[in-house]
Image (cartoon, rainbow, N blue to C red):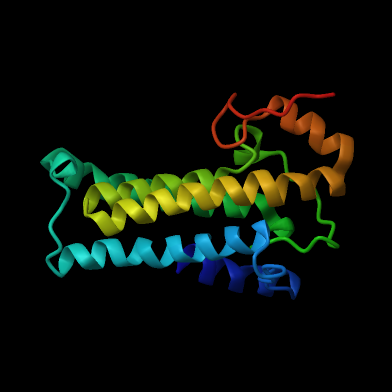
Length: 189
């Protein structure tokens, strides 16, 4: 609710635009599949803890007291990191990609250490939720989210940003990791 609802409202109040670019493209395309898997991961992300509360048994290998204690802490830190990274985007914040749109390239704040700090923090949040309620639904939610984020970033957003920002994005992507510092940097040709 904070990452999507509050941020959408804040974007609309600040710019007159919600920042929502929800068109998934033609059905069956990679862009469409990435968006469908992302939405499924978000729904499963809520369903995992709910299933735990409803009595779904945890996966034995993940069912440890330390995980149940650290899971909520990790999830809360992840949510906080999502919000900070969203604020770092300022007026360039969007959910989704409009291939014809050109916003300013954000490279400061959290984006100085990760090209995708919002998605990285979402993965941290999902991991925390899975540790908190380590049942099969929560595990599938985290795996689905990781796959969706990889598809969205590698096959939708990075090609878009290279087209939109050219050499500026290429130079940025060559020095800053995709999700974590140093990993997934793009090679300059």
